[in-house]
Image 1 (tube, helix red, strand yellow):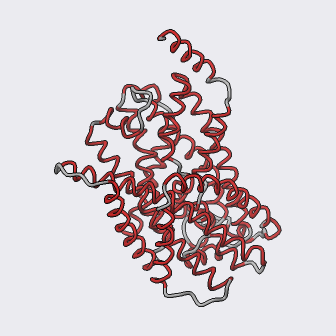
Image 2 (spheres, rainbow, N blue to C red):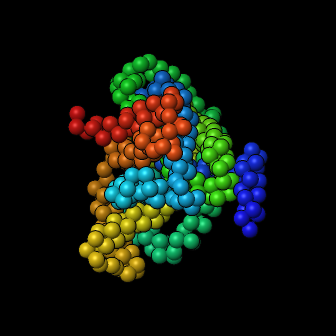
Image 3 (cartoon, rainbow, N blue to C red):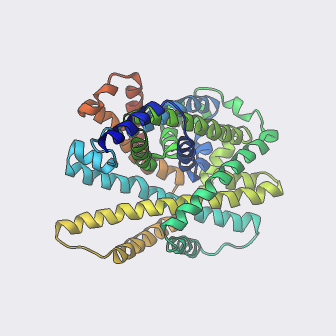
Length: 426
């Protein structure tokens, strides 16, 4: 029996140089996880400063996405046990206290994004009612409550139904985005070239990049699926998992960056920096702005519907993650006191907390991009950019990856993303 397992493992290691159907499925899965509602806000921050910041961001997109996610994947693969997920690896390398801290960080990486989407869905539907249906929108507090209760009612159908629905929606969403990018080509104009200086649109190049990097981190992020991806590939390929994971990530990120940046460039080239500043001020996604900007029936109706589908998909996915994180915090807190809540009651407490907080934030209508710049992007950067790089210097199993220039680049991008938290202090 043992010799049979050894032969199987050896074959898996040899086969890691080939390409399997499961590799293609994971490549598309990683791509689909990253492409969501966050992409709908990237063109606004990416293009608002003019041409030069946009070109720099396009050049940064692939290396910052690939090297960061590869580092996190390598970190998960560094655990002793083949089936160990990221929490187990953190506890193995850094202790139980760090495991609790990771649970807290995961919650604060996901929860602010849920708040972002609660604001986004309210603004998208309000804009659709006003501009496309020519109706008087109900009071904002009532509209936000109806929408969030509706979304949380969908959650009650169960995790499996939600995950299947989201996976079905991902690829039509991507195809429609690409079709929309092609549709915008006749509307391309030269206004952005008038801002091709180092002081784009009244703000410095560096300020534009500083605030855009957290939005890029947010838009390309698919760190929640990296742990499951690494575990699955390690079980499939054994010692050849790292090489295989790197190849899959490389192809997935190339697809991701090419399609997303094509969509971003197409949106930016069809508008002016002033238009993008107006979209930011209106606190709506690029699709809602395009629907109102162009006097085209197809665009006017399709764009906001696509935005609503994307935001709904992303809200549901992040709700599941936020609920899991919040439940984990309660379980750990009550476990220390020797108490335990039934899962149904635990989910009920979490649902009430999520309903009240998302409704309040959606009603108050804070800046979506401001929340991404100062909450979502920076917290994700701690987990995705800094933790794996710290592990490379501290964990013996990861020392083989030290001394690379790419490590310095990842740390630098992570620090820039985190430093955006200080923007509102100035």
